[in-house]
Amino acid sequence: MKWFIKGLKHYADFSGRARRKEYWMFALFSVIFAAAWSFLGILVFTFLNGSNNIAAENIILIMSYLVVFTLPGMAVAVRRLHDVGKSGWMLLVSLIPIIGGIWLFVLMLTNSQPEENRYGPNPKTSLTTFSEPARLKSAAVVLIVVPIAAFLTQVLQLIAQNLS
Image (cartoon, rainbow, N blue to C red):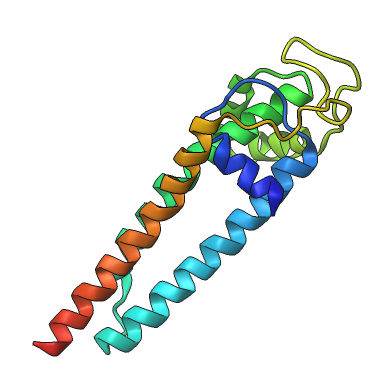
């Protein structure tokens, strides 16, 4: 979980390097939270609305989740590419159908360059793995609060409609 929090705290930091562990733990927790967020939204909207058409109600939750996790996900992916000695622009290789996604997947699985490269020291041997500027801590809190607030707003609106 500490790797996921680190990714959120450094949500707009496209410089430096990220270990394989940092990238894959961020990806794992992102998928887990996306599934939980969607399940919670479906559950709440189905019970409160009483209908099976939850797509319209759940779109705000999905969009808020995407808004929050797209930038941190891109930042940790770029830092991961830096760790293997590639430019962050290599992320665009994923736009090539099938082969681009496979190539990017292989790059994300590749081991770090053991020595310092042009993007910084090796994060496996560096002592500054979890150095966090204070301004990034408050930004990470905001990124977590926004989708929760959007969800609660939707739930309160549905409750108010049901009470009317």
